[in-house]
Image (cartoon, rainbow, N blue to C red; front, top):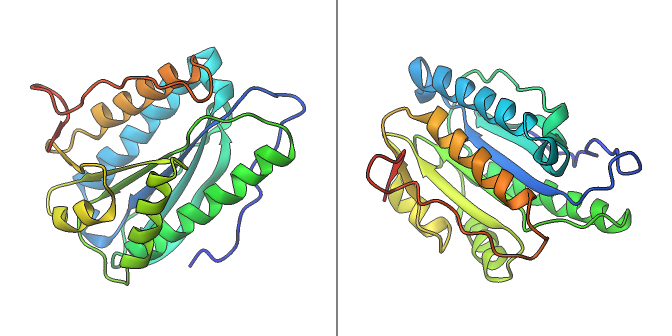
Length: 223
């Protein structure tokens, strides 16, 4: 299990742009085997390619990937989109969702302190949870932290359930409405995420940026 706080890729002197940190907390439990994990990996590649193609987002959006399947792992430490090497995720084990969320919150808090220490402005961070099941560990403590963080506007927490997900649990995780992925449209999901973060990266930190509703007819999600 991941038990250390990472240091991130610090290129603040060369790139003093404000940062939009994004933590992807991704379910890689055994039930994701086959088409789901293949489409998830393909979606991550779309996400990386779209962000890297935008000159401003490539310098401002930072990504960390936390995977959970049997254990929690830091699949990719914080780095700008331009430097993001997409990990190849493989399914295994059960679903320690509570521990994964707690770890994601911890590394985000540490990264924000690094920004402050180095005088780097940052946008409201994104935490994006994707799962096709329910937690097999204690998760309510993590849920309390998520709700408190949302109330304090410390981050924006999004949850997406793939077919088979415990949507009732996702509802309890945050005050934000969980979304249900339409089939295996991971590529559309990550295209939306990339587009949204490109819009945010062009704004001023602290400015509210309206997001396209992914649950409109034809969108990748339902509520």
